[in-house]
Image (cartoon, rainbow, N blue to C red; front, side, top):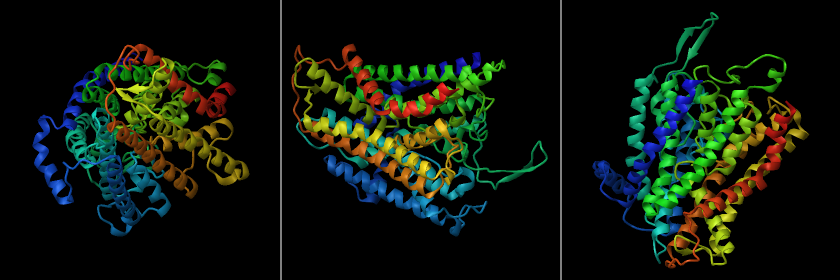
Length: 564
């Protein structure tokens, strides 16, 4: 237990120490200021030249949105074609993996292009080596770079005055990949290799296990995939069990490295926000609010997992180490619960234990994390979601002090608030409507075989799946049989809607704010970096989330807990 506490403290210390200078570096990259990775400029210029892109051409929010959607559509088609033909081509496919079913390929392509990495297939047995590299690794880079690039466009909109131009999506996209993701991925890959994570293209190897049976163990480029999947808050990996697999997460050290990687860029982008708009006090406030909620969820999840199952405790049997069901003995309850909060707070979705096996309220905390979907959040898009909460809070705070609402010296009017509210409400609509439809189908046809558990936990399994898809998280309660037409199509559509509408909305707001002139502050101006605004911000997050999701959580994890 002491080593686990040391591990949690070490992870938080490294993340918080490294995030500040990394945030400053990313801000300099966005601004085009001199940085140590300037040697990448000739390579970037080659990319622009080959693609016929003028990276200096500024576009408004509509032009940047078209660029984003056009590029991501190409990535989607690319992934779909490779997945449905991987068995026919036989390229880099020593295990003779068959081609994907079109419905599963649709879900998988949608999943990886949206930075979700929800896997309705078993990683090492579902994809060839070529698919792992050309689809999984490639999309893990470009989907993460897309999110960071859109965040950069928002920052431009916040500092621009009387201009609807937000910069160039392609410029920020390429720089995010070459100067942020690629250097960090190389560093983390080397650290994982040194710590024991394999990386090869060998054929699967057969072993005789302790029971005397033959076991086939898949090999693969594990360190390569693991580094970018964690840094880019992608989540899905080479192995179906993700970071619970000993080849992907070999020991205590690799677990610490990977958990740091999950949190590092999302936290750093909070400070990038402050550096870019030259308002560090506001960034500190945002960081404090996020961290307060994060630590609250960590304490709750660790407590419930450390207590174990009350049904076992009532029998007189003790669980001195807490609940170990579905967990790796090399990590235990505390590091598993901390990972669970880290991965759901950041839209990462990888696991080092099975969330379906965790205690009801710990599982409920993970769902609540994804329902808020703005506590650090996915790379780039987490800050986009949090910006919407900031905007609504500034609007409410402005009305409370009897002034026209404003933020960073710009008036907040009906147009911006309508967009913000509609985008915020989209998230619960997708989750609750999807859960209602699946629950209804289970009621009229309970023999469809989706659920491994009935009653409250069965509902939680369906609620978690739609929450994960809408939040572009990717983790799941894996007792749910999700590789079928219904789940592949519904979650695929939900991932696409849950990714692009929350991106387009803030881009439209950024374009609107960029065209406005500054309003001089006065004594009546609400201080957006003060404690009063922080209280309003926390209140808005809690009220919106509670009103949207409390009934559903009551029917699932809360009811299951009370029934134990």
